[in-house]
Length: 202
Image (cartoon, rainbow, N blue to C red; front, side, top):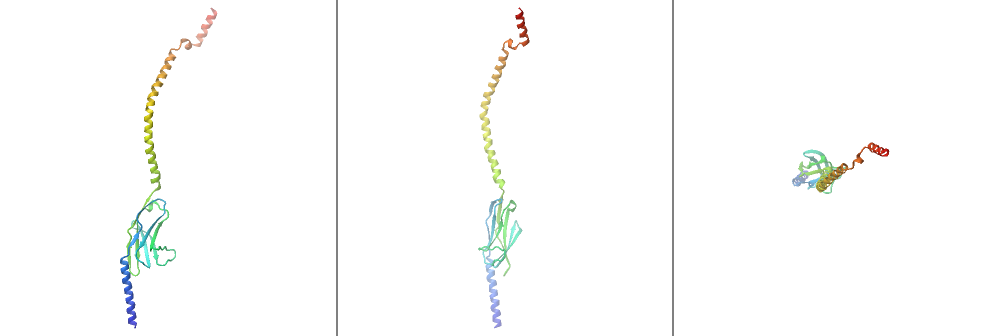
């Protein structure tokens, strides 16, 4: 009886291990697609796996360096986040340009056997605000203003050609008129007064 009990226990354990091993061989890790976002936005990267597992350790790598470790269990414990589709998330509440890079989710399973799988990776590209808003506005202003300035200068040239000779003619006529003024008006007031006195005496 004891031998039969031990045999059935051993068979059950062996069958369980074989079933788990077949299941873990098909384990695949799925990540969010590549994303391009503006600086300051909120970004979520998901890491999901295809098999039902009791306990999973997830390590997030950025450009090959581990930046975060998360543990997922089939039963919710404490502050561990469990997604309905057996997923964990890496959350950026206020993403910056320094967060740009490729993020890989590495899933570790250690019960009943040790297995680890890497996701395909998610490339996060963060675009700076000033490079899109201000630079494009500046280029648009420059492109719009320069042609208008050239057109204005070209339109003003004929007016300048007409006004310049008229001004020269005006100054020439004025100078000539001053030269032709009678000598009396240009005489010294004293000499005029003496001439009047001489006429009175005579």
